Amino acid sequence: MVKTMTKLIHVILIFSLAYVVRSDRTLNTFKILHASGPEAIAFDLTGQGPYTGVSDGRVLKYEGPGIGFVEFAHASPLRTKEKCDGTDDPNLGPICGRPFGVGFNYRTGELYIADAFFGLCKVGPDGGLAEQLATSAEGGPFKWLDGLDVDSTTEMVYFTDISTKYTFRELPQALSSGDSTGRLMSYNPKTKEVQVLLSGLQIPGGTGVSRDGSFVLVSEYTGHRILKYWLKGPKANTAEAILSIHRPDNIKRTLLGDFWIGANIIMQQPAPNTIPQGVRINESGKVLETINLDGIFRNETIAEVQEFAGSYYVVSIRRNSVGICKCFVEENGRKLLGIRYDWIKENCS
Ligand SMILES: *[C@@H]1O[C@H](CO)[C@@H](O)[C@H](O)[C@H]1NC(C)=O
Ligand SMILES: *[C@@H]1O[C@H](CO)[C@@H](O)[C@H](O)[C@H]1NC(C)=O
Image (cartoon, rainbow, N blue to C red; front, side, top):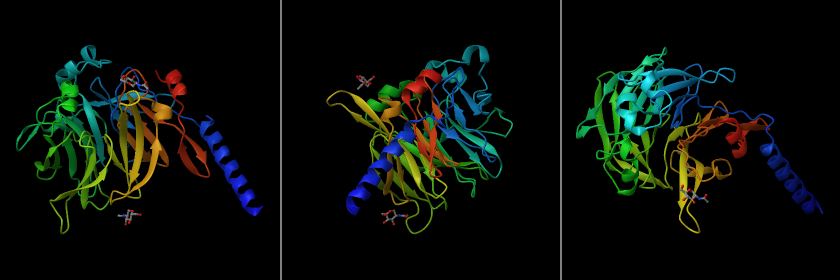
């Protein structure tokens, strides 16, 4: 009897939770203005944002529900509003720029940008045209910078170059060719030195540095794994694979030191389909939590899941739809992901 009661209570709990998740009582969502294709987000020192790079070359800043996204910065000195605003044509990238990875140095308030066409750049707290810091490393010019993270303690910047063969304009070839010329690099703002930490990577989409700065993680999108590169300690300058995972993209550290990975299971059978997932791992690569996002993003890939101030942010680069969502419901003080696809379609096209 007691057992049955307990079971019953469990069932009720599960149902009420499901109900809460589906209600849009505290549902909140962000919209991209006149542009599409956000790939990564960052929050500034005072918790404002998110900031995100979009496909027309701008970095936008979210200014709150009444205002939405406003223009903040861009990396291309050639960019004109007439030619670029609102475009999602990759062929205009060499003129408009294409910011992917974004991350703040919390000591200086500067925003670092990994731009696919203009290399590693940074911009001050007032935004505007970013300063170009590096466009090449040992072994050649950057073809397509993508992932980025800043260690605000040491001020070191970690970033990825997807390939030394393909640019963003050759995305399909880069994905289908089995390319393994990607690199993980670091930039030291004190010496302005760019260092190649790892080469021979298979489409390294994201990177995240550990809380104590002893290692950096890098994802291999087509290599289906997460590598850990040691920066300090007995294993310094060596790498090891810590997790096999389908199509991992950006890696974002949580306050506690875990990492969220935006990942995508791509299936061919019975029909082609993508299941986007947020996967949280600890520093050893042990999976702690997996959230399936197919109820929300259906058959679309996601690039990033980020936890900030108790909420989840999911970033999808897909076109003509919302890119960033801050969508949650409160449940016992914890904010749970609960975004409804149809709601997004209606409100954020
Ligand atoms: C998912 O998208 C792919 C590519 O656009 C398409 O071929 C496939 O039919 C879609 N699958 C489903 C289940 O909608
Ligand atoms: C990660 O989780 C595993 C399994 O719970 C545990 O053995 C390991 O110590 C954890 N690693 C860290 C760095 O917390």
